[in-house]
Image (cartoon, rainbow, N blue to C red):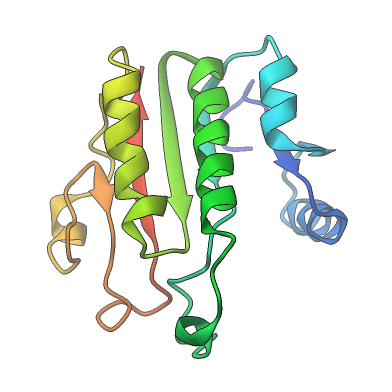
Length: 170
């Protein structure tokens, strides 16, 4: 790792992703504790605190239109379950964030319910957390709805899929 004394803990519920994550970390020489678990349950039971939490939350995948052009025609009955899980994960992550720590939330979705709504909810529900300016303004200048604490690049102007991310600090 680049920061001596730092430790990395990765939580993943899908066994295939756990194996791929372990392989990728090993190939890059990165030491990490990779835990095959439900992240929300693990965080809710844990008494650990973290200086940095990257929450790459399960989502609808609406930002992956280039890869999955059939997405708009699919039935999305799962959205209430997904947004509930996202909120549960955000709540648990906020609880585990150390003073001065940084929480980054990201989804490969363009739906406001999966990004902006959670950002607004977290700001209201957790007043001890503050939006964190982690993306340079120049990076956000070409992205719709981007500020330095909220980033949502437009997939037609961004080399990659659409996503949204926001950051808070304690």
